[in-house]
Amino acid sequence: MASPIKHYNKIFLLVYILFAVALYGWFYFDAKHNACVLTDLAASTNSNCFIYKDVSDFCFLTWIITLIVLLVFTINNVLTKGIKALKKPALVLLSTVVLYFIGLLCLMTIFKG
Image (tube, rainbow, N blue to C red; front, top):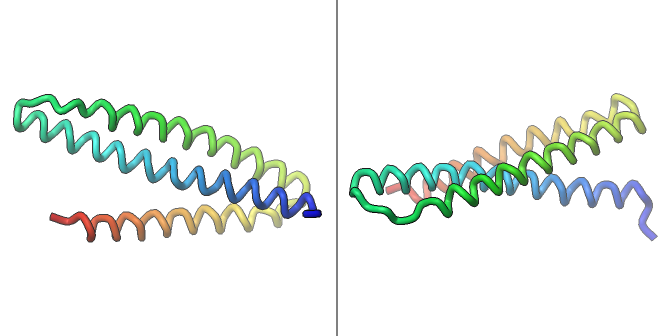
């Protein structure tokens, strides 16, 4: 049977992945909505860009909720293990920033044109 510490790490990892996907989705669909609106304004058409805005708003809401859950997990971990428990969230935050910019660079390279 898995110990509670391993179970906690699995939950934290799942919430972190949801957090990272929601953050990326929010930025991606917001940019997609802005590009669609600018194209519609230039061509004087209406291609129903609202779907991108709705998905962007959903990703933003998901991002906020997972951020709150991650903060609760982090505060609980600090109260349980002390200040040395902050090392893991700092590494997670740093890896999120690095992975986001690597992913953004790759997508800009692939879809350039």
